[in-house]
Image 1 (tube, rainbow, N blue to C red):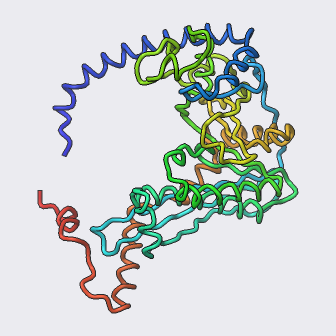
Image 2 (cartoon, one colour; image 1 turned 45 degrees about the vertical axis):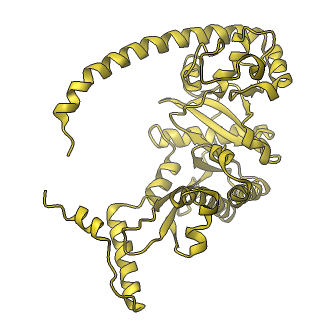
Length: 391
C-alpha cells in the first residue's frame, strides 16, 4: 500500500528541483536558438566537418538535407484515401503461471475514407510455447521477456506489409506505425540474434515499396536529440570535431554540450507553426548501416498539439509527391484523432490485452492441459498467496 503522507514530505524538494530545471531549460533553449541562427549561414561548412570527421565523432547526430530554416506548409490530403496501421501487445511468460509460455497479439486497422468500404478492426494472436521459441535467446544472454518484445516488433512490420498489400486500392494509401523505424536496440544484439529480427522487417518494407505504399513511423513526445546535436559542430572549441582525441569521455562535461538534454522537439517548437514541417534530416545511427538502401530520414511536424517526429525510409523521401501526400494523410489522421493518429490509436486498442483477456486465456489453456491428461495444473503457491492476500 502506498503511503501518500510520507510521499508528500518529498514533494517540496521535488518541486524546487523542477523549478531550477525549468530555468536551466530556458537558458539552454535560448543558447540553442542562437546557435541555430548562426548555423543558417554556415550550414554547408558544418556538414562538411561532419562528413569529414564522422568516424571520430562520439555523439549521435543527423545530417540536414534541406536548409535549416525550412518551414513548409503540409498540403491538404485528398478526401479519398486509405490508412493502415498495426500495433502489438503481449502476455509475458511467467514461471508462476500454470504454464510457461507467452502470447503476442497484433492489432490490425484499415480505415477507408470516401470509398464506401468496410474498415478492418481486428487482431491476430499467436502463442509461443515450444522450447525453441522460449529459450533460443538464452544463448545470447537475452531474457525471454526482452526477446518477446523484439519478436513483436518483427511481427508488427510483417503483418503491416501483408495487410497493406492485400488492402491496397486505387486511392492514396499510407501505412503508419507507432514509434521509430530506427531499431536502436538492435545495435546491442549479437549478429545471429539481429538476423532473426531485422531481415523480416526490411523485407516487409520492400513489399510496401513495390506496392508504392509509403510507411511512416510516428513519434509522439520524442526524446531524440540528433538534430540539436548537429549544432554541437558549431559550438566545438577545437580546430576539428575529433571527439576521440579531444573529448574521449562523453559522459563528463565537454565544451560543446552547452544545450545538453535539450530535445529536438523543444527547439523546433520555436521554429514551426501548426501544419508546418521543418527540414529533412538523414539519421546517422550506426545500426542503419545494416538497412541497405532503406536509410531512415526524419523531419519534425507541428501537428497542432505537439511537435511530432516523422520517420520514413529513403525511397519515400526520393518520391517527393509520395512524401508530401503521406505527410498530408498523417496530419489528417492527427486531426481526426484529436491530437494523435486515429489509425495507430485504434490498432493499439485492438491489440491491448486486458486483465479479463488474460484470465480467459489462462482458463482456456488450463482446460486444454487437463484435456491432455496433465495433472496438478495450477499456479505456484507464491502467485496464489499474492492473489489471495488477507491483509
